[in-house]
Image (cartoon, rainbow over all chains, first blue to last red; front, side, top):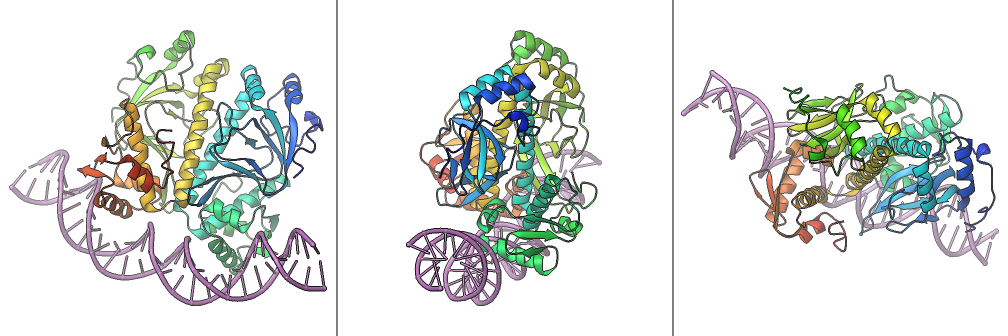
Length: 248
Length: 248
DNA sequence: CCGCCTCATTGACCGGGATCAACAAATTGT
DNA sequence: ACAATTTGTTGATCCCGGTCAATGAGGCGG
């Protein structure tokens, strides 16, 4: 739980792996310097809580590496994940007191953080920051609404296939390749987390994996490595139009 | 289909019913004047399409009155509503080519519109506009994520109760009252639209209304007028914590 | 007034996914 | 190395909500 390790390690923003995708994307050198003066890093171990629902959070910032889950829990324990955040995604809520959901590190996570007040103050003077943040929130909103279609209308099989499709695209994109046949990638989260994400139970998740394996849509080595021999078949299983938007 | 009626009727922004809630909320007099020069009104009849998914949309703006649904449709016809927009809500996507979902007028609707290019140009010069838009998008994102919990984890009964709870609060708020016992309101959409919103079928929606009526959680006159004799009971049926956040 | 349409309700039946339970496999601690 | 724990798979059974089908209730034009 060395979550304060590296707090003072001042890496250069200009060398940052998410420099051109994160909230700072549109910042010029001078604006970047101001961010650089405010930022600090913090690391989280898998399973570690970043903020709890309802808690006042002092900080906000970007995921530099790792995966963070955002989830809501009902009083009787039912849980729904409402977002999976990867490198460059923004965590925290400017102009809001507290977070309405739990944020938890799923893998080892490294965040680039700012004190909320300072960040907000800077944002007022920095249109580049505000513009990018608005853009990112619009993307999040689109993703959330896509997920609403999945949760409300897709079958268990389609849900799993859609999830794998998204991971395959992410992995392919990160590798600079196309999401073409034969691409291999790792599942970043447990079956339980997948179930929470897709609005299913672990048992159903497991059964659908088995089913997709049996009919050859995917193949797996271990329970975390997944390969897609035929991407179109996966799209099809996901209930997506297999025309056009292959890599949209 | 007189959707161009009133296009040139220039009502004063200062008299606008949504002046203090819409995207223009933070605008000063001078900024408001600039918006006033660009704006125009357009009316839509119930059922009329405002923009289709994938279509290039020239315009964006605010709902002045009426209710607009945003929905996604799968190729086999399954449909999921992803948002219900009321007066003061913002429609359209700055910095985006096309809308990823259908927007349809549910009731008679009046929009206050701007040409997209002009609005975007103005937004760059007007932090008040951008700030308010960011705020509104954050609210939309919260609402979308709440809806994800509903779609993924709530039972049919809880879904209906949650929907009614939200409408009751809206109506109470609009009337300047509290969402207390005995409050009455109208359902703005058909059973089919409710089903699309909640990820159910019309039959299940109908059955749950009947069930809530039978056990006295609600009472109805006709199929569109709903009364809540005991708001706590409704909260309870919705699966919400009945402590604290009564009117959050 | 009647026929037609849309919207809503109700019933009978079925099936996908949840639940309960047992077990296997991987990971961790000592 | 071995027990303990976590994570994943599989089977048996149940039930909520979907599907199919019939009927009711308004609204509207002729």
